[in-house]
Length: 93
Image 1 (cartoon, helix red, strand yellow):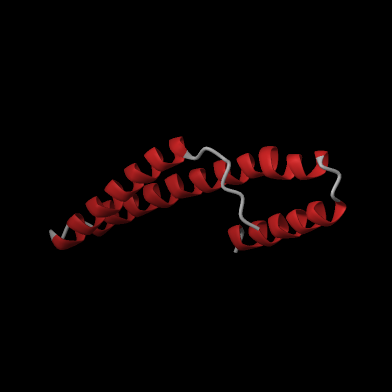
Image 2 (cartoon, one colour):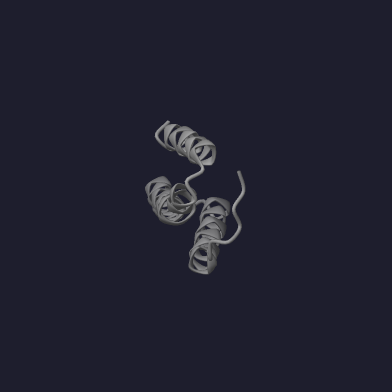
């Protein structure tokens, strides 16, 4: 179920920073940097992605899902609830 109306501009900026972090990690590996330093940077990138993931989910809940309930379409609301449950399961595995 694709909804493209949500403004993700701020998330794109954050993703660009994560992309820079990942390039930095690659460079660290190429240069043979200390493993613990590399692992620390990997953890930071994963944490940043997790934060973006949670923000997008929150936006989805406050925007798309809330809208489906206001439209009183029980079928669409049920589909969206199932979709979020599936997403949360994937996020926690």
